[in-house]
Image 1 (cartoon, rainbow, N blue to C red):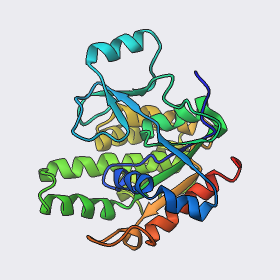
Image 2: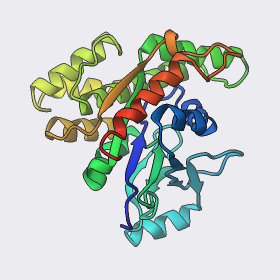
Image 3: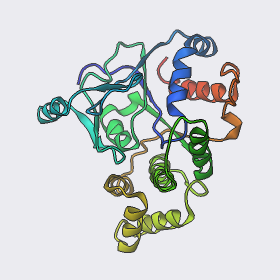
Length: 272
């Protein structure tokens, strides 16, 4: 790997918590961030490579063909790769994704499935803030987007998305060595607790987790986490109505901005 940037600030999280919006606002308001932290910040975005077709605007992703992605994988030029359940497409990072000068600060939106791999590879250069929300909060966001005509999902699709989101919340909070109570479905919470207490040996909990999340990725990462002492997530940001910007409210001076700036301050304490 090439020279790693001095600090990579990563915001993993489930769908429907507004991570893309947060990253956009941080980049748009960089000058205010610099004022508050009293330092110049060379803020860049760590680009994820995918074989998914490019969308009109891609802030954090680079799209290549399936053939190109396979070739890079065969040449060991993709790391922290995974397959996304919702579309079957592959995502990973090329060796230069986290390259930077000594004063560069990189923003990343790595998946929950990549966060542990990145911590193992990048070490203290990586500072991860898990952006999560309760099931009710995420459901409200999904239904608001549907009402606004920004998405179209059936009731079954909504519940499937929420269930997988619950699994992502659990994985991220476990990587922070914190509690995930009250953030996810009660039965799922109980199944995960049983899975953890049995060190992954309880077959009933294993079957429930797989059926609930509909994801092999979840079980594989959960097993890695419960057998690892590493804290891969530094902070957990539980989004709620108090930091949710109503339509038209200015990001500058908002509670959301204050929280994001505090995460930057914490991440950069040892990168002066």
